[in-house]
Image 1: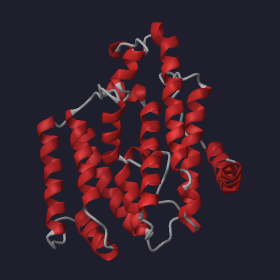
Image 2 (image 1 turned 30 degrees about the horizontal axis):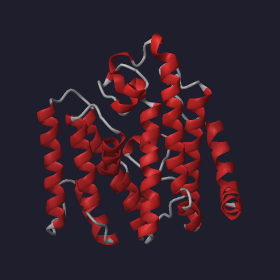
Image 3 (image 1 turned 180 degrees about the vertical axis):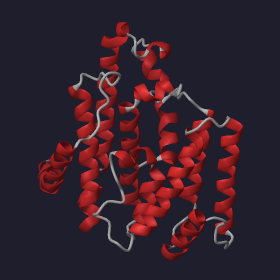
Image 4 (image 1 turned 30 degrees about the vertical axis):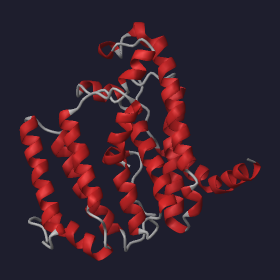
Length: 280
């Protein structure tokens, strides 16, 4: 999942084994600070890219055997060596953050998926490595879950992204439903907007559920953590539907009551999914 999701889906939760918490915190600190370089403050695009290039140079130094030039990269270097983590996913995150500086629209769903493959999927990939579970089948399902969570965040934050002059809904979808990118939040577009968002929510829910079998294969804390994450994503999609897709007036987010419901849904999820797969 991308760093944008940590508000809703905290990966460094109490479910993490204590031996892995420092590693997850180091990865999060890197991703969060790099994302802020791309997104926050009043720096120019040139300054943002230069700062992200400096992060790439730090990663290259670590790959060459260095130990980092500031405390954050020192911790990251230690974690990479201790757990034998690949550095490529961290480079992929940086490439996505650079893209955020340069790209504010996505013409097709495929180009948006390509962005998600670098902004979201690397975090799941690294988590699987930490748990020693990064085989081909698990990585495929992790990619589906992480991409779906990124897409959920986009659907949840349409109004926020508009203020940043960004649109993460494919322009081909807006065109199909005759919605002008300049008039997303206009009242006149609401009936068409609801129809389009229904399509987006259903497609994203199907993608999330396609990766959900990973939560059945992984045992222990990581399996339950993942079931919580999947149920949290489903809960937000339900919340978007509950406000009739009007994310301009009602930004869906998870409350304490939601988390209680997510916890119980996660407890039941394994049994329910096994029953569903047996009946299929």
